[in-house]
Image (cartoon, rainbow, N blue to C red; front, top):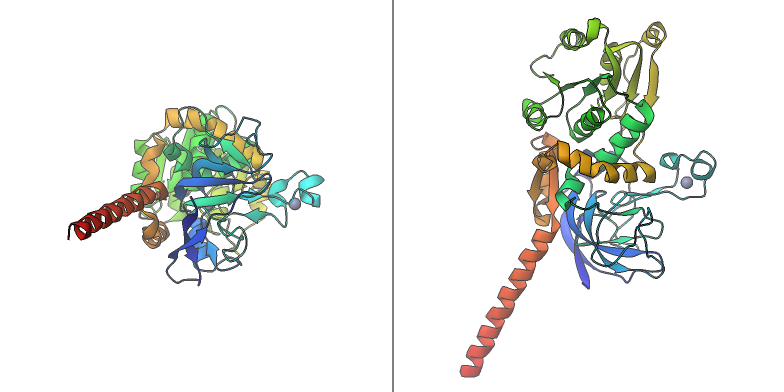
Length: 395
Ligand SMILES: [Zn+2]
Ligand SMILES: [Zn+2]
């Protein structure tokens, strides 16, 4: 592999284009991974439209799964100590924290690192190593990257199905909100973060998981794969007061939920969500990843209900590892592959549009299929060339 294709964002709001770049040799501690599947996330839609300050041009893609193609000197194990060899199936965390700042060293909260690097978000295409996004044939994994070998029996599809929502939910739902056995849980939102959070609530032993989301197709899919015990469609019930009544009806003694997980990403969801929590309950703001402005809130609710209000931002390496280790249990309990819709690399614009419109749950760029196709195209061209030269020889 000497050259790789990558999907490049050159101008906000304009179509992304497939370009090529040479694949560099990995330096000490680095690795080259051949990408098989790359996830398209709601964040990519925001990046595409310039809602976040990022450098351009940029190969998009902070979610990827593939195989180790080359290992740099000294890199012999994955991030949790398993031996790492060329050909191993791996995933990698999108974050590379600096490891030196106050947040990384003193606070031990690497998710709060102010200068963390993120694949597919702030690693420009026109600077070495160029291939720093997942929407490409290959990615250069810089020294210090959290690379994890996939557990036995876990396919690339399993690993990409939840994308960054998987480790995000591991952090927020398990680590921060701390759901315990028997809890009644409300999940606001039925996109990938909502679905992943509901799955983790089930795994943590919640007695009842109530999903408040939409559109109907997403709720149907959740229901079909056993995610959520009750589903409330916000389009069928557009009045928040009505939704609150339905949620309370579904909780023991109409007391409200022990834990409310906001995974909607809409500012107004916060005021609605904490009304759904019981007295002394917990409210987690997990979905407000993009700054979408302010919203009216009544702080009296916090005091009156003695609410515990927490936030959670992305994930650190331990959450990524926790998610990788939970994948066998997730894959056993839920048909993760049902979440995916595949697109060839060349159709990244369609994948972005479908994600933006909520037409699919999880668009995934099938990078290796493109490689196979281009390989077979190459073979075809080569055989045509051979045929021609044969004819030329005959002539
Ligand atoms: Zn993402
Ligand atoms: Zn740092």
